[in-house]
Length: 107
Image (cartoon, rainbow, N blue to C red; front, side, top):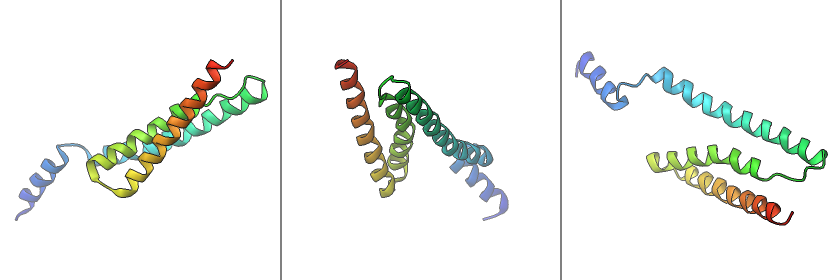
């Protein structure tokens, strides 16, 4: 197999996507998750200390990003740790959502 055949095979596997761009997106996903958690925590703390109650909905939204990524990785790659993470995030989102809706209905 010569150099051109290897390059063509690589292009077909990557579907002409830029590998550098894929790496940037991957790193960006890690950063966006951290920023969402930090921002949600700041809003959560401010709301609690200003007497606004507890907003579990913030964390339900924040964990959605990680849950979707974990489910997508498991579906595409079948990595068992991703399945465990996806299930954990799904349970967290369900619990936070239930708490948030309960708080809204009992006010």
